Image 1 (cartoon, rainbow, N blue to C red):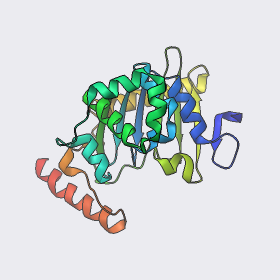
Image 2: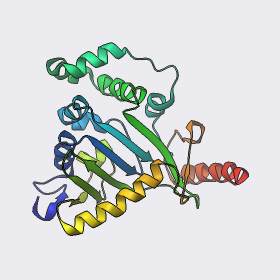
Image 3: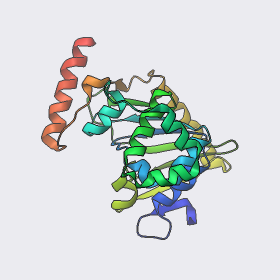
Length: 231
């Protein structure tokens, strides 16, 4: 894209970047606000290429999840046939057939990757008790690194529904190399849970329900009460 800028109203859309980046990456780190696993359906074959290539992913997300996503990440009763998922991943034709299963394969695949520790999801909030609204990621390939930041949530609507834009920095340019170095250190401090600007949440902290100003305040009040006691 010209200037490595992607925007929903142009011929170079955010989803185009994400599909290409997933296909060529071996490791991806996300610092996010909202997350919804339906986004992997949008990425489709690009996501499969990433998975088939042995890719791993870390996601720091905020404390709002859909009921199904909370179940996929934490639910002890969410069971999958690991061998069936593994066979589909290894056989491209089976994968194409699975695209007609209206999302079930993708949900099971996310659960499989979580169980294999190839996807690690960490809910966070800011230590000042504010909701995380970040929308950035670092994509690592065998040779290069890309950093992306912009307005698009890593959700189905963020990639193909809303009007959004993102900008990309690349490791083979001096400005991009410097920014990537800074952001890589910040991401590492978050995923290692050493960055004191954040609190690191568990399953009981995740809020499931309608999202509005009232429920956001309610959820943050609950976090404040819990984590002030711990500190």
